[in-house]
Length: 302
Image 1: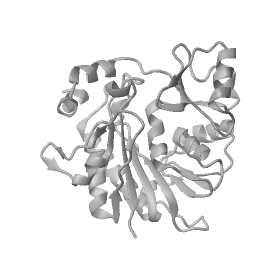
Image 2: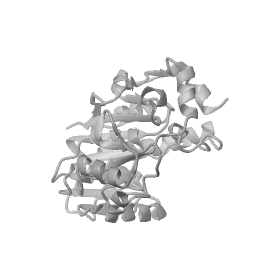
Image 3: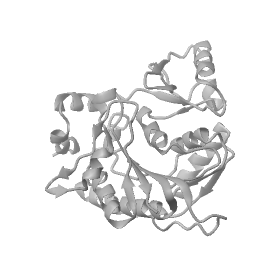
Image 4: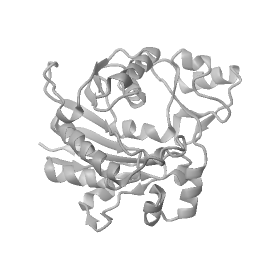
């Protein structure tokens, strides 16, 4: 059985799902609104002779049919950042505001971090953490190229993250873009499924539960936590959210994604999850010609 075989029952059109997973992923850039407007970027790309088209559901995203995102001067000047189209969803759900305290718990290489900084207008405090020190070098490089100044970079295991170095004891919003089995990245990484094992799915789900629990604990009452993965596995998605709903004081918040999605699943392989997980968000590759993604928005209880 391949990873995709597991999810035939979850998609209404299995043939379209499989066909989309077999196609290369479109190259996409996100406009860094700290440095330029979408209109200015469009003009610059045209002047460079770079073919581009607006993504219809987000005016700050461009598809580049013929080119690599990192080979033009708007990229080198920090006006754009190469980012998978669907991966802007977690930050849109998080909706960080200027002046807030925001934690990106598993941040490297920094695409969602830099998007959060832009939504915050580079104001407030954005703490970007990753347990992998090597990956943080890529995050720092991207932050410098994009001109971020509200950023603090830390290197801790998010499962037992300490706020002792800071002058505050809770974040307003937290993003958990969790390490996962990466099944949904098959279109940009055709080898993603070659080393896939069900044991790894269960192992990484344990890590995800720990990170998400700590995120809830580190966020103030009434604050927002967004959990996201790029996998289809319910064990890493709805099951993780179900675990945290039982273990921590939080609730699922309904969120209207700006593209076509499917609801979270409430039953899988004989397991039944909290009915609230139906209000989480699944994105399959064939729905919008993107990668696969999962997003859950949570509110921390008082």
